[in-house]
Image (tube, rainbow, N blue to C red; front, side, top):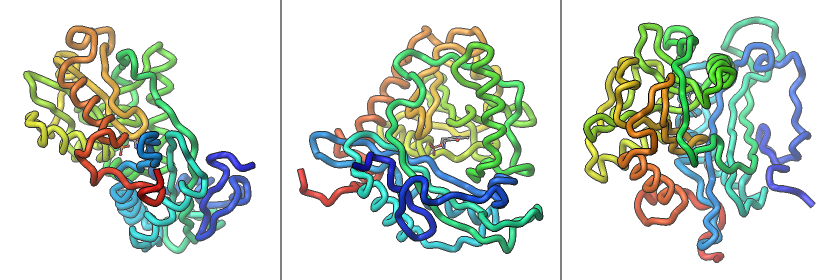
Length: 311
Ligand code: PMP
């Protein structure tokens, strides 16, 4: 009997998890030349429905990443949406899941280049609950590793190889006893966490680093900006100094994996009152109830996997 996650999609066909394998000579194995997405799907028991969060937006970002990488991949978004929905359905999920589509240079050449290398679209899924322990507040540190800059490897593209930068920072943080790392731009402004965006709250305003400050322009970040505007919370996207994050009333991380992760200490300084603040709690509750389909608000964030009306 197959388990959720057993079926994958590789180059136009559905197959078993281990039926598609890359030779060690594949370009992406050698140079990290691919881009990917991380997408959540939430199981709604009441509706007996699996709800995929911001699916089209993630696949649009994947296509933009592929363009930056000259991945010779000129797919339209609609067929990718259909393949991803069918993949989740074929895996028969009745629990929360994570979807990982990728566009990779699989051609076999030793040359370091981007053009003229065969490219493949593939996707797999895994069951996924909470990624970081978000029940208690997170303790963060500002990493000694700088965020890779737009003129090195563009942060707005979700490039496989650039996750070495994220891994260096998050490992360093965990080795020092923190939960996660915040990374600065090369000119010392706040960029983001190793695999999440960051918001702070000052005097009731939500503030987050602007796209020009070497961030992945997160879709959760976008959803929070939309939610805040909808709920009348003032928002600003701007440059953020390192010391602002130490002085903020509230801080939280956001991303597909972490969802909304309240931060209670940074580099040994207590954030606010040392527990999730009111704006963070509001955003967290509103976001989670929207992605889980427990409210009719923000219905455009959710794509159902199973035919409607089967539950
Ligand atoms: N920044 C980085 C570096 C990430 O890897 C992620 C996770 N994809 C995010 C931010 C958050 O992006 P999203 O909300 O689209 O998941």
